[in-house]
Amino acid sequence: MSSHYQLPDLLAICPPKSGPLHIHAEEPKIQRHENCGQRCLISWNFITCRNAQAAIGVSYMCRRGDAKEFEAAMAFAKAAVILEELTNTATVVEARKWTTMYINAFDHVIQGTQAQHTFGKLVNGLKAMHPFVQLIRSLAASVNECLGDLYRKDFLDANTAFAQGIVQEAVDRQEAQDANAKLTVDVYLATRRVTIGAKPPLVMAWSVGGLDRHNKPLDDDPSMRGMEEAMTDLVLIAKDIYSYKKKLADNGAHQNLLTVLMQDPKWGDLDLQGAIDCAGQLFESAVARFKECRANLPSIDEETDMMLSTYADVMVDTFAGHVEWCLICPHHSVFENEESRQKGLLSL
Image (cartoon, rainbow, N blue to C red; front, top):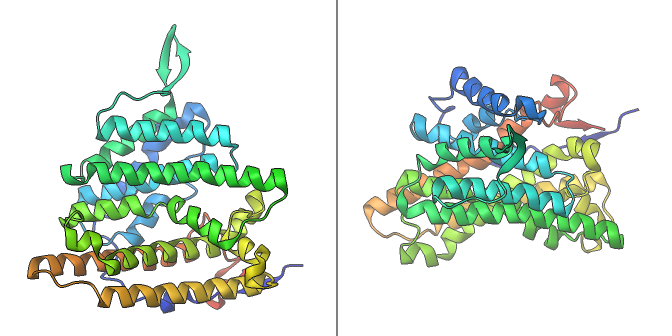
């Protein structure tokens, strides 16, 4: 018999989004992106992003920019989801293998570096490029088209940190198994804030909006950093709440905020409903932090102030759109039926 848990109404807590779904989010574009991945990997028998429908999800989170910028956002989302799916239960060695290929593929395209560990099986006596590398390079090319020269290093640094964080998750998993240890909320969040993959899209937003993040007042401003940190927390909290059911079925949800809240004594003796309620309160607190930091952004000049306002809108679209998409995403399979969705009831 199923147990039912009340989920918080996260969408009602979010500020309003800046507009409707992206004008370039037509089905043919999305379908073309999905088919690209399938063609590259069909002989490899590798899971594609079709189940996650990452490209469609981007239309909920990316509501600005032209067609090229929208394609770039889809490309990064697809690459990130593929890497996450590959390493979800990977050993440390396996995670390092995949992330090394991922980092090298992006570096090769965006920075022109000579990539290592990029080959697969022998074909006619020659080393063939691994299909994973082939796919990631094609996606990196779309990302590169919307990055200005000023932002390429920032993007690669953020993307490398994202991938290395995934290796750290594998290390945490292994250590927890070896020592029968339990993750604390503080340790979990420190890694999860990187592996949620929010920073690379933020760098893309800097580039698209022409926002010079190296400008000293912006780089040093605590409200700017605080706004970005709050947005990251909002994305990860929502994702962990809505993906709990799937993660529980996949791997026991050992690396999920709800599980960590239940096992960290600092947060009390929480059951699952208590952990869900607590995560909802953390989300509400992060929204309040975001609003406060946005209200305290520095005023520099009219043009920069407008860019900052647009950048803040992009972040609202990202975390509110992410919540909106999670509620209907077939990949997470949060709700059993429409009635459960309307009531916000999770059944396990």
